[in-house]
Amino acid sequence: MSGRGYRTFRGGVHPPTHKELSSSKAVTQAPVPAEVVIPLNQHIGAPNVPLVSPGDRVDVGQKIGETEAFVSAPVHSSVAGTVRAVEDVRNFTGAIVRAVVITADAEQPAFAAARMKPVGELTADEIRRLAREGGLVGMGGAAFPTHVKLTPPRDKPVDTVLLNACECEPFLTCDHRLMLERPAHIVEGLKLLVRAVGAERGIIGIEANKMDAVDGLRAAVSSEPGLDVAVLDVKYPEGSEKQLISVVTGRKVPPGMLPGEVGCLVQNVGTSVALYEMASIGKPLYERVVTVTGPGLRSPGNFLAKIGTRISMLIEAAGGWAGEPARLIMGGPMTGWAQEEPVASVVKGTSGVLVLTPELVDARDEHACVRCGKCVEACPMFLMPNYIAEAAIREDWAKAEMYGALDCFECGCCSYTCPAYIPHVSYARKAKAQLAALKKR
Image (cartoon, rainbow, N blue to C red; front, side):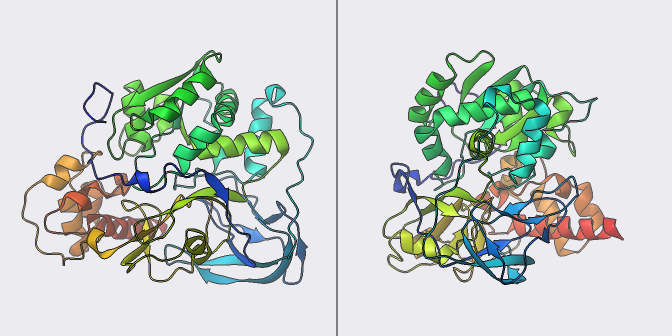
């Protein structure tokens, strides 16, 4: 579904989507784990401190970690049970983080909906407060606290809210299923986002390979003034913030700047649903839809999983291993994190668990850059990934910054196109980490 007059951006790639493995699978409830491991830090920003201790009883939706810092998001228990430990664990990136380990009760009560003020009567301040209390973050992967995005500086007003419904990452279909199954809730969440920042309009950006979802969303916004649906070309990474803003509004976010510089706010459709749930029934973000897919699984699908569920349990829910698993990825193939073992737990930003078989894994060794320029052509940020990689190899961090390492959002287009199999994203991540460490000194 490319090249039919739909709007798109310069750069990017067209990897095989493989979405047919799970796109027709309705969301089902994943089994409740006997134990959940809930990291206290699932967001960009200040770390949370635990509010519970070993031996404490907790309820579904109870807050178990928080901080007073503005740029942060509390975490909540996803089960009713007993705190077994508060300890350090290794998360899906390999980092050591503090986590609350909870032994779940054999019988799990349903979430008790709270009596809330009518959604249509909520003020902007109330919406922001609910977003914070609910622990809402960007659910497309970045996990930036939602209430912070909903608090733009006075001198940078937001006039346009964009809802990212592109789901351009191959294999992933969790957002697609939300759009098919809950379009009205997505739109209600969008209305709350628009009201929270005082925007003039809200636009849902969606790729043209999801026309079934387009129909449902268009019907849902048909009677809503100021809301619209924009159909976009099928290209990766169409759903990244700066590309989506450029395609839908024609505005260009300057390097090093945020969407608010051009009057825009971008949120994921999952976050929109989570905001509606928090505003309407007081349900915090303690579970999310996760696509569990790949040819290495017997029965790929989309599951509503409790935060803290180990991915081994989701693999079982998807029928278990099929054939010879060659690579296990938390997330999608372009931006996800490879896992040695299925022990990491689902967090707020977990969109998928992917199991690849050998024929889909190219494990050839990296060799010298051939100066073809394909990575430069593919980069949607107009960077020079080859030069960033070279600077990182030489540990010349100043030069890596000069070539724009800090503007890289790790989409993986460079690595995907490289005939020399250079892991450009790994080098960019290393450069960004070193530059951040240097700035702290």
